[in-house]
Length: 487
Image 1 (tube, rainbow, N blue to C red):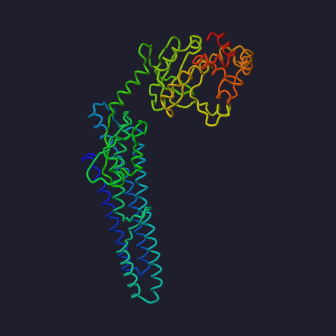
Image 2: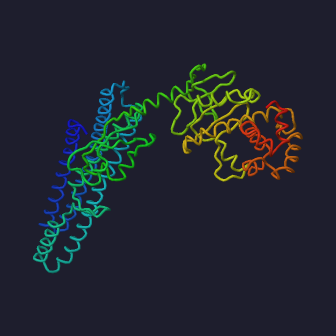
Image 3: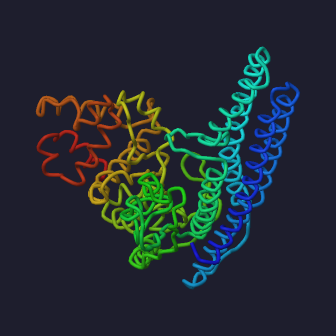
């Protein structure tokens, strides 16, 4: 955290600490007064009432501090991020929009709840002391004032040792009002500043930050000094900010902060990805508000190959989709003309097929996840970031041919009763004849598991295109049908 910002935060912390010191003095003063004259019930009752009033004022002060200090420190985090971006030569769109307002409000409310815990603990402690003293007063009234002086002395000794404002937290650590308030204030102002910085950087499209370094770092923080972290977890190859926090970085009273880190290699790679979504020599334009699979509306890049449009969202999440427009174009160009004719549009998407749950039931395949789907002269390629990129790209030609097969199946069968060619006589007869040769009802394990002529036809098209000799040997009658269709 920059020195000027740290001074700003320290001032806010000191403001709260002084407020708590005053409240603590007033509470202890009320207790001492009660112990001096507490053998009269009215003084004990007045003590309880006065402490409750002090705690009410404390809660109100907590609320005011949280609603004023936390947004101010959060704003300083925004300003720090703006300065980092400006120093890096990045143009910045400044402002304290709704997202930042909501974030600051949540931080303020969480801080208030932490501070209110103190008031609740002290309130219960004051009530317990009142009840104990009242009981001692009743007992002492039988033997007189000397007995009360002994009681008062005993309570003074206990308060001197433990204090009415002292308590233990869930981790069995000892606190008093001042130390707890100071810890909460330091921790939450640091969190507000860091959160403001992180939110602004992400808002401006930057995900990487570098942790600061300083001498005397504790054992929890030492391994993270100078480390590059991913704020959102979307940048592969870097530990996340949340992982660092879980390991102990940014603990209460921590002095570490972070600043913008620009990965030049990643920027070069990102430029390469952008170029791959605009393949060289291919007609390309952008369109706003395009409706994709599942009625998802996005701004897109449209590349035209012959009559086929290859469509990619402008804000495609490359961590969720390995396939680029360039790879689709290259694969399309290697497919037979007969198959290219049945495809008007290919969509490259960064989300799952909305119909996966339906196909899971239809095919009786638990956890079914579509790699791609084809129909209505379209092909959709879905989220595949969970797979190795090499496997995805290696599988692309087979998947493309398979989905082209589905489209061909529907076009050839549009005038048939079942609306698909694969349910007609020509294909079913070829399947029966091939069974006598291969002893396989379906050409693939996938079609077998799905018990589907549709998948049998689509896999047959893919295998015929990509491994024709082997396919003709095992399934010659299907091969004759496909040749007759112009493949």
